[in-house]
Amino acid sequence: MPKPVFVLLHGAWHSPSCWNKLIAALSSAGYSAVAPALPSSGSATKDWSQDVEVIRNTVGDLVKEQDIVVVMHSFSGMTGGTALEGFDKASCAANGLKGGVIRLVYIVAFLVPEGFQHSAPGTRDNMIPEMRTNLEDGIITVRPEDAKDMFYQDMDDDAVAELAKDLRPQSFGAFWSTTTYAAWRYIPTTYILCTKDKPTTVAAAQYLIASAKASGPHKIDAVLEVEAGHSPFLSQVEWTAETLIKEAARESEA
Image (spheres, one colour):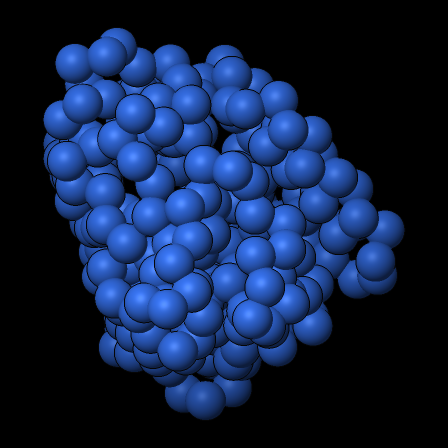
């Protein structure tokens, strides 16, 4: 059987370069990965529609011939979850496509239902103090000195300082957008919970998982815990690569 391709969706304030080490590890194991740039990170987009378009175009091109595993980190759980309508394996087959999305992997990402909105339009509701908001410019920034506590809790200060150089402004409007689809209801789903993340983030992730499972039909068939901070694809690269490969081969139990 051909190996699936991994589509890696970065979180807020980040760029595709955050996946470079993981892409190299996957390549060493014989797997291909694609990491598209999501427009809401780095510009003041009015909403997340451009992110959804990029994700749909990326996945849509690949599923014509190949099976796909979509990996979402943090914020991109919302855009990825809402962008994948019609890309489950059965729907792709019905449309004459050879491939399809065979699994979703959420890495401490927003596992949310249809109609979810992070913040009410025009407000900074549900935003933590480290999220520096500028309503006039339409962006939210994270200061370098806050990067470790936000994203890289289990990494040394020198590594964090280098990573912080690549952080970019995030669109305010993206946090006001609303999900229209919940791909985890239709595609087998793995959730990776990072126990060294901010305690509030861990608690929120556990709540989202429990709420999703209780909300109705779903295909969440694996919840994995790792002693890592918010970004295990940077702090535990080999573990993350091995886990993704293993989960890509998992038969759905939901």
